[in-house]
Length: 304
Image (cartoon, rainbow, N blue to C red):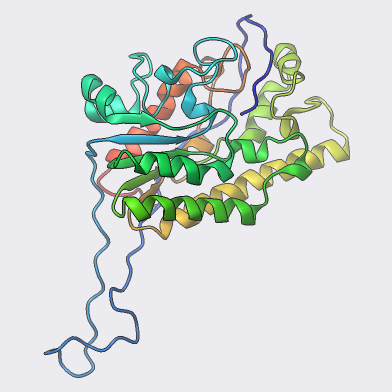
């Protein structure tokens, strides 16, 4: 997400939403509908479809890709990345990252890697996936897409078609090197709920006016038709992006979607950075780690 100038004053924060689910994996027919039956099979017999690969709830290495959220931007100091506070691979005990929960502190330091970049959009994900694949991880975490919606204007948001194409390309890049690496895909946070909760705070409005996510947060108190329509377009685009993430993930046997848990999670005042009222604080990073750990370690994806 975009860097901004902010005050060091501690502020109250907005809410952005919670509940947990995860997307189901799809099985595929190994030989195809028109393939002949194997030798020795009764006439007219069809081969049994291949079972969906089981999900490993105890991966032994983790690579993270994404944007400023996964870099821990503004979680520790103003206008700075803080990867040690990352929900995915951080070492901060207050966060208790996904990697630490899965591997333990010492092993996480040796067998987890963070390739996320502050300000990155989905178009940057294929390159990050290539870097991640170079480490041969058992699990790759993805949290990406907020910057595609957080643009100077709603008209400059990434198209849904481009967003889909770049995400599909990212998985192809990973599969070329790591055909069976597991992928955990987190949904994009609900930007409209953040606006609705923070618009009443003079401090939040002052911070947002410096340029954070203007497509959604510019003129937060304005309620004219044009401004309301702009916010609605951004909210709809985030919903469309999240649908793409879920659909594309469902087409990959080794991908698990969070089912919308990040989008639905309610970030309270303690879960948002005191410097920008937008990025997760250490406590917010810890909540993201908890949601991810619950999804990754579940024996089965929860029913939608």
